[in-house]
Image (cartoon, rainbow, N blue to C red; front, top):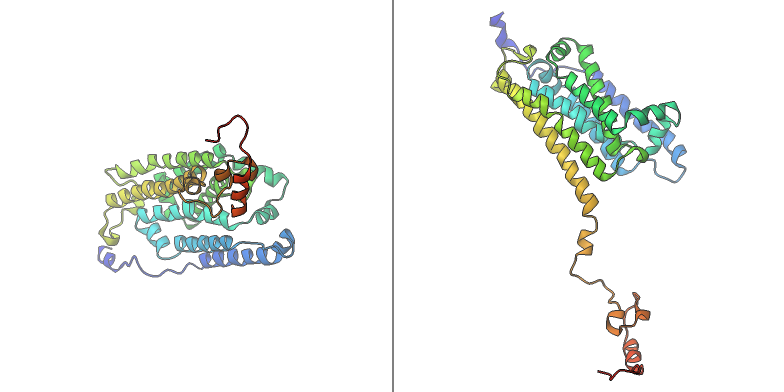
Length: 313
């Protein structure tokens, strides 16, 4: 058995037709909805999607393909838990908001409707419900017994990925969801994402400071890039905490400046506008308008009689 170990190639190409079928199906379905259903939903002459929607959809499909296909999927499933963590980060933090940004409001209303399905979605996307459910799934998928079993079972592995994606979409709905009525205020979004950045600290710290192998299935004799088992776990913890934290905090800072810094540059500029207010020269509120001051306006102001009770100084 030991003589066969050097023949193992972690980088050997492995074909995953199910990934290509999934990406192809989602792409065809999106194009069909946009070109066939979209014009009926928004009315003729109105665009069904924006360039931003299309760019977000392309980004989501690329992220899904990279996270689920060779080589990341195979390295993460057989050799490195840090690669597994990167895969989960892509499926829970990077891809879901892109999917929601790619979905126009009319498309989700067509899919969900206004009945019971909408009410269920409304409940599941409440910040407390969505946040607790998402973090519960994240914690469950990091339990050693679950991880070891998922690596040995393909159906379980894909089922866990499916749960991660679904609950990630619900978690991101109050932030960038297509339904405006289900979104929070900018400050609410910032606080919500701040809380989401705190919970992963627990499993991340556990992985970073563990002094023995946490996931036995990744204790392989072949070490990719020479990374040890302990080093692999520490790298996974760093990816989970630093990668996710930086991503969420970037969004938090963006939301903060979008809310409080809007119009700051215009309101605090030293430059004058192209039109000088006539009231600043004449002192007459009647001339307080945006019309440019002319010579006739100045002559008319000097021709006015001096008010009684003043010495004209």
